[in-house]
Image (cartoon, rainbow, N blue to C red; front, side, top):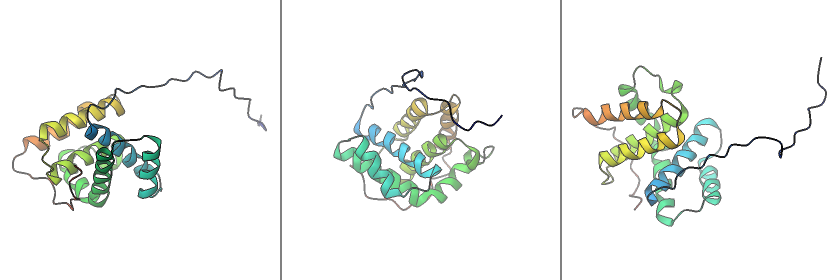
Length: 171
């Protein structure tokens, strides 16, 4: 049997689950959240960087400092993505990055970018913020995976984050 018409859909009858996320604790945290959303969209579409950033910033108004930080993170990750991926792959060698969840991959990229850009943010804060993103946006195993990779990076004194093209500080 071939359906020629789709059944009527009544949105009022549909069960909709709305997921409420806790508020970001700082402007930088809010910036990281939006940057992750932008990077996710860029990773799974052909949309332009400028269009995605502008669209997200119109949807969710942020303080000017947080807006600058979104741009800093997104542009830094996009410009340095290849170097970041090579570095991350050393610590997640059992998981090819193209098979890692898009959210997890971009949380790691942002965290390693922040480590490499040396923006006077402690490694503990960077890891804590990455773990928070994994809790809020990731799947069941995201927190453990992100924490494991970043913990291995933090514990390896012999290795330094990749040399990157760092933008001006987003402060």
